[in-house]
Image 1 (cartoon, rainbow, N blue to C red):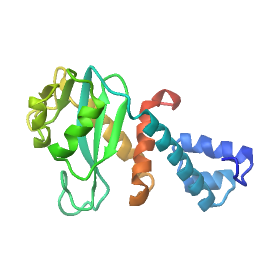
Image 2 (image 1 turned 90 degrees about the vertical axis):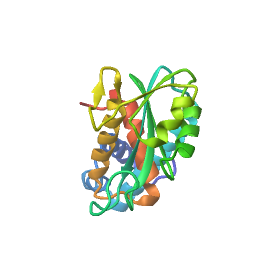
Image 3 (image 1 turned 45 degrees about the vertical axis):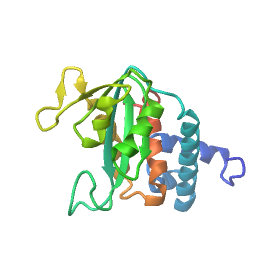
Length: 205
């Protein structure tokens, strides 16, 4: 950010802490800057990441692709799982051995999910899902559709969605450290998690 009043040194340190997954509050303390300044700087970094990922969003996935939806946020009490009150529904696609793509969605209906799959997945690809009814339409689509029934087992040789579920677990674990993500900025935090997963070779294990 060329117009920032922060020195180049402090900007570099903040970037290092952002990449390391440090919270803005902790980074501010370690870098000797105001907490609001660090939070604003981190927000700008997430905005840059989201813009870059959007530019790449037209790239399609082929081969074997896992699809799944998940729910973030909301209170623990009350209804859980699909449709849980106060939670943000998110849809994800993962090319096995490759990248993940995420998108916040209004609901997990076929009418919502199929257009995203058709836009992101090459026809004739193999698509793995769980048994959610929103994926029924894939049975009569241009894809080879396989389901895994999680009430019976989580994997049957190649038939599983362990990759995308692993991503959801990583994303939720990363977001928990912030003790609540503002709903208005949730999409930016989600894209940050997508970026981290797709560039995992940049981060220490």
